[in-house]
Image (spheres, rainbow, N blue to C red):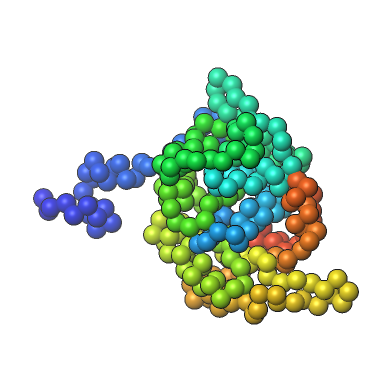
Length: 274
């Protein structure tokens, strides 16, 4: 018998460590039936993952799919605010119940469990990662066609936990038009490749501003580098969201799901084809 190198990809032995590595995916709550899980990720913060998660969920909900959002950004949760949710999550002896939005999107976020929305979450990485796993295992999601996981930025504990313990069917990478877009996309792509997670495509946020008088598109952050960065990895840009005061106001008012725009229709089509 050859000596174990701890590299399961090059080993045909069915050892205990190999079995452990293959069984890291956690089962959801017994009363949950989740068909597709889509991660919304980025290599850095501040690019608008929560807006993208919200719009995609609203789009799929309008297409009459049962939709949910798992807010994995535990230290910076913004999903409940965008949907205008002020009630708290309830629980039964069987598990935790998500809170439904105005149009019926099921949502679970740490802010739905805190006494005050402004209370800071001062927890270490492993505890935060454990909360995200709990949202998957202990929440009674019911029948869900598409669950969107709004991820924290970067490649730390929580993204690693999500990719290892939740059966993610694909990810959408969110970026912005600035020069550092190549770094943002590269980080997300390389982590997805290492975790063997399919990449659906790239979405550019804050892409341009539109003149209210003539409709001309103004590249306020300069010429976009997203197409070029995506092409390096054989990826497609599935949508570009403008800097839009009305969209920002809809988020502030908790009415993101009621705001209609066609910027992410192509991304929604790609998700629907999964």
